[in-house]
Image (cartoon, rainbow, N blue to C red; front, side, top):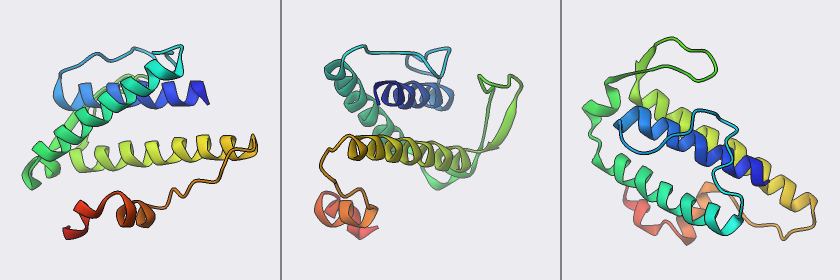
Amino acid sequence: IHGTLNHLLAADRIWLKRFTGAGDAPTSLDAILHEDFAGLRAARTAEDERIAAFIDSLNEAQIAADVTYSPLSNPGNITHPLGLALTHVFNHQTHHRGQCHAMLTALGGPSVPLDLVYFVRSEGKAFLHI
């Protein structure tokens, strides 16, 4: 769980650096950025705020525009619309957060609803106007 949550933070920092040119990004997807869960949680909160601010700054033309980057796992330039890369980033988060949820459930943790609809109804009411 700890490694997966660090991987998510590392990947998000890498992608946001690609998109914005700003921020610290590790050079490895398996980097352990925080040994303790408290530090990891604080860093996750800060990174989520950075991601939200970046998304809020975009317009439709920027989302449709191309972004070029070099993957860590297979260096060489890749170019495609920013919107596609953003879809990947959020799908990647969903995938690994689901893995963590499964691990916690297997360890006997409480079942917590992760459905997007549940989030929108309970926490994301501001998004209902979209």
